[in-house]
Length: 116
Figure 1 (cartoon, one colour):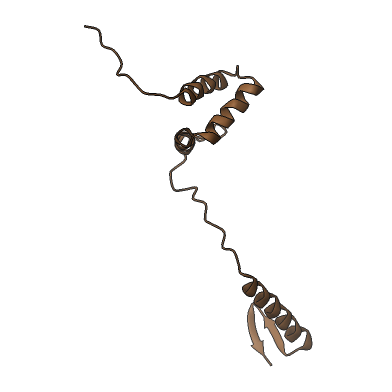
Figure 2 (spheres, one colour):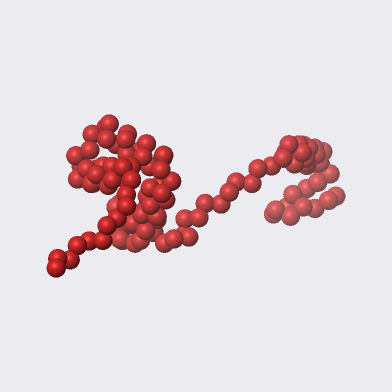
């Protein structure tokens, strides 16, 4: 009895991805192959997830300390978008504050506000 690897179901995209990654890592990939690799990663959600997971746990090649990226350390916080009303309120507050400072009603001392 020979010990065979268990059968694995793979799609054409997954198989092509593996071939293109090997060519990329060996430095033999052409521009068209790299473009095809990019299209496969963008098109197939399972491959995209695999690439993202690999990128999270692989160390940066420029990192001299050979530290690994820790999951959760590079969390990107979503940008808080201001509504039109809050932007207008901020502009009016700045104008009013500037008027108070220029007219001498409000004096700023070491980041503290003092009203005369």
